[in-house]
Image (cartoon, rainbow, N blue to C red; front, side, top):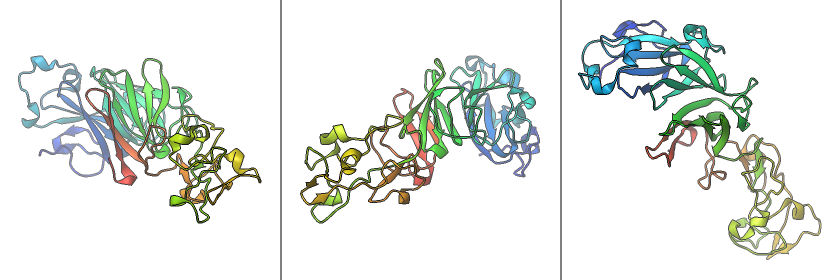
Length: 336
C-alpha cells in the first residue's frame, strides 16, 4: 500500500503527502494506467493523481504500448493536481477551475480515455469532463430541482445520482440514481435517458394493496375479478399493473383490479372479499399503503423483472466486460 495525500482535510495540490483531499468518494484509472481521476466530493473538484515524474498532460496521452515501465506507481512520488472545479459547491459549466460541481461522488473514464463522466450528486446532473482541456459540460439533467423523468438529456431528471459506469463500447452510460431508487441509462448516441431497472412511474405510488384476507385465502392474497381464479400473476395479466408505463390505468394485486374493487357488487372468490384500499395513491413509505401494499418507486427490496425490481439507495454500478450485466451496490439494502 502506498498513500497519496496528507490525511488532513483540504484541497491543496502537490506531491505525495503535500496534497489534501476532502472526502474523496470514487477513483478511476485511465486505460493507459498513467493517471487516476478522483471524485473529491466535498472539495467539489475532480482531481488527478499522476505517476511520478510525469505531468497529467503527458500522462493521459501516453500510449501504454510505448511505456517502458509497466508499473511506474511503485517508484517515486505521485503528483496531485486539479482537473476541474472551483473548490466551492455550485453549478456552472466551463473550463478547469471556472466550472463548478456540488458533491461529485461518482465518476468513470470513457473507454477511449479522453473524457470522464461525473455523477454530480447534489446538482442532480451527469457532467462530462474532457481530460485534455478540463472543459466541463452537462450531459444530462434538467435545469430544475431534482425529480424523476425519462426523456431527452436536457429535460430528464435525477435525484442524487451517485455512481456511473460506461458500457464496454462507450456508447451508453449506466447511472445509479440513488434517491430515485432506480438504475438509469443514458444513450450517448441519441442522448435519451431511460430507466433500466425500477418502476417507471412518474411518482411513487402504492401497489399490491388491493386484497384482504377474510379467512379463506391461502397466504392472504385473494383474486377478485371476473376470472375468479386463484393463481400466480401470470394467470391474470389483463389485470396486472404494467410498471413499464408511467401512468398505469390498472392497479392490482394478483388480479384484483381497481375497477372491480370500486364496484359494490364486486365478486367474492372462495371467501375472499374484494376491497379498494389506497392502491395508486402517491406515497413516500410502504406504511402509507394499507392492506399489505408497497410504495413502488420508494426504497425497498425485491428481485424480479426490470420494472418489478426494487432498490434502496443504489450507490454505484459496474458493467460486465461483455456489456450484458450491470452489478449494483444496493447501499441501504446491504446487498449487491
